Image (cartoon, rainbow, N blue to C red; front, side, top):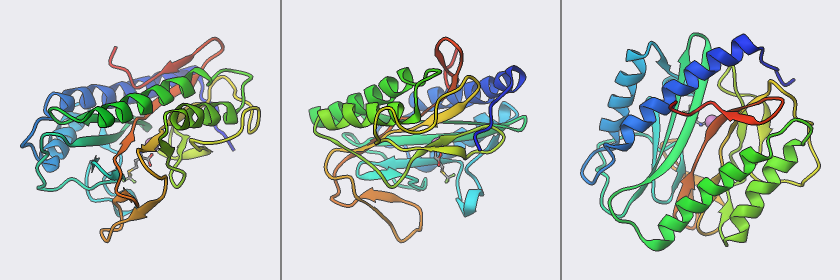
Length: 249
Ligand code: MF3
Ligand code: CO
């Protein structure tokens, strides 16, 4: 069942999602060669708590940290550690928060210093696929319109969508129905309604789409070790246009 949100609930979701967007923006300026992913994690937790929120990922199914930091071939769920970011890396930061009973969820991939042209293209295409998917999140369209648009954008550039992980509904739970794959068929799937709130999150590999989970039980990597990027926004479908909730103003 897909839970439709009332205007009052959407207002609370705005607050939660603005909080994660603001914290992610503060982290962004700290992403320089030499910082550890653990330092970013600790800063994120402090900033979220200052806003009266709880890091949503900490303790979720035993996940040990507040954010996910996935470097280079790591796709998602990289665990913050003493590893230092270095020039030329790309790092995906995924941040979730619970504020007043509602969840916010957002991710973006950042360059560390100067990166290769192909890495930059991977970031650009992944972000573009997210925005093109969001543009299809309109009343009367179907879920497959979002999914297929993301897939077409990514594959048109010679990259691969990750199929093992998907986006999701979000609200009073971090993960609600429906699942939102980053691949699909236009004109299929549930019809989109005003009040649906989705976390749309393309994960894109520069090479093949297969992933593998490391020994830590969390970190997903591209099986072929190609670079991987991840962009996520939480959005609400409204009568006219979708509204991005993970924005800073
Ligand atoms: N954005 C991811 C998701 O929606 C983050 C989950 S990380 C976890 O699943 F640690 F909480 F699992
Ligand atoms: Co998510």
